[in-house]
Length: 271
Image (cartoon, rainbow, N blue to C red; front, side, top):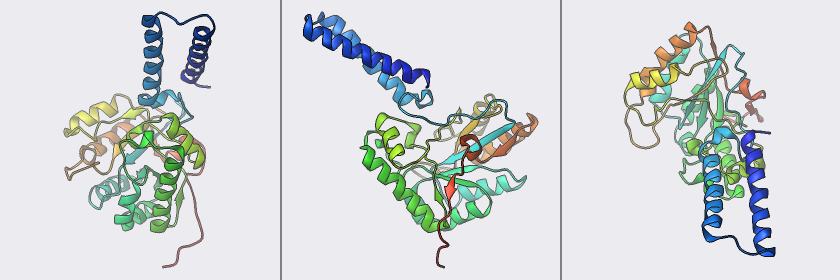
């Protein structure tokens, strides 16, 4: 069990004990009760925004550090221009990646999803809509959203992804419960590129290359969340791939880190 989850359980038991003590013996001084509450809420907030700590549920954050592989992952697509530009770069030396797709964009550009699959890359889902408050939804709504995104991918390309990356990469208790309800393993990342907000290619390259090592899961984007600006990832990807090769590493689909098939192929779709 992750240490952060043990700390959460321990803190929850302690908080409950304080509550019982207050009911039986008498209330704590207001300042002390406030300090305990603030500390507990702070711990919850850290667990939400530091999803890599796995405080609320299991997630794949990185692979085996002894493995000589790196998983490149791309969020927020598909996009008819930037996704295709990234596919072209990956195809030059046969590099593999995983694309976490937004369902409503899949419905708009199903042909791009088919191109991703035809190129040999693996798929996950990033929700049907890239909702900022996704982590506050009910577990039932989160599970339904995951399956709605899966349905879109299945209609587009005939494969049904299993893997899920939450919008914004935030895992709340509700997110973890919803993903479990949908039987969707959560995949996060160990290297954040910052290409979703950065416009300078060199800044993205430096941020990724200094943290590249065996077992790394790298977060990149093949579409901007909103607007039409060109992503720094398109320019940053070639030097990142050069650095991966210089380190003697290979690129793999993120399913190699998770240890399971990323999708299940349903019956063949009718033309």
